[in-house]
Image 1: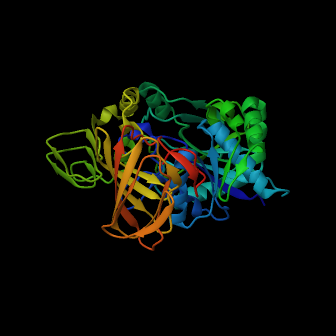
Image 2: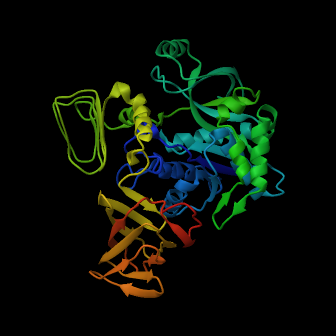
Image 3: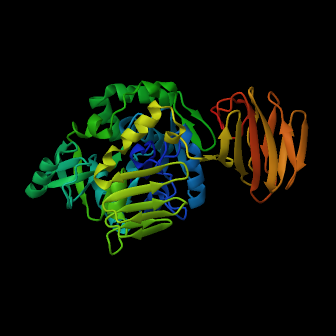
Length: 476
């Protein structure tokens, strides 16, 4: 019997879900309330499918710590595959195939891969598991199975699949793929029947996928194999070599599915949404008597058919309709629901202006905890730093800034030049520019302190790291 691995794809940046999703804090990891995330939902969905092995998680270096923390929260063991840079799904799935084949070693039955983007909402996980189980015999025989969703509206934000001749059970051959259509074309496909939304979820055999990639996109197959052979491996993650960067950014659909004769589609008979835009959150959300979907601290009077999201502050909506309002600590999005596909253009403008709001929230997560920017001005910056029990920042030095640390709660073990000491609530220390230092929490409760930075340059890239427990080279 073929072993089967869920492969969670976490490479997206979610720019159309700004301001909650940022490049360094993408949609699959963003907190949707009470610790709920799309990534954790995907882990749960995979755990409900009998016989699957531990997941393979594919993400980039920036998001590795979010994935590791989420896996720990869910009590799930996993192998992380760290892309040197995002190259879309075709190279990413090739990494998953090579990793699964390595894990299975000399097994006579090549492993199956369940390819699961980590940003989907599925109505009934039980029905999803049944659909996967129904696809296993077909995938084991060498078909590349995708899961099609029966459309309930002429959606222009999704690709479509035209089904062909019948195969085993409810499976059908794929006749053709249709890119995101115009509204007129989408309506015509619904009227004709036989079309499915392309969910982007696949079940395939690792060796078959690599063989089809060799046939239809040989450069991707070659670069990915070369990068895999040059991989470096740590305790719980693997980094391919730099040859991976030579891959074009291309999807599995373009590279293989639109060309292979092995494509099959099985209906996914439950509600599904690719949560790539705020309108999708409105569609799947619970609506009040006026058609509003509200999350967080919301006061709506005379509002109708709105999506209202508060991350902290009160959002009051008065006599408005068909709006989306998304509040975070440092940015607020207000747009007609009909314009939500264009949110990406806001992020592009922020990038052009080199504004930090497109990259980071005021609260930034690190493997040791998090920090939050409280205030900043000419030559100064104030942060609130939280260090998890037992965690430690790297041994580091800054060229252009000095730091003053004041302990708010917990116990800090602080290395300051040649001295190492314990500091408790209301105690403080000063670290001059150019001094080697480290912050550690030796206690069993979170360490909270206030950091006051001062100097000519306060960027996060002003850091020389000497030792780091987390294998990092970038700032933070």
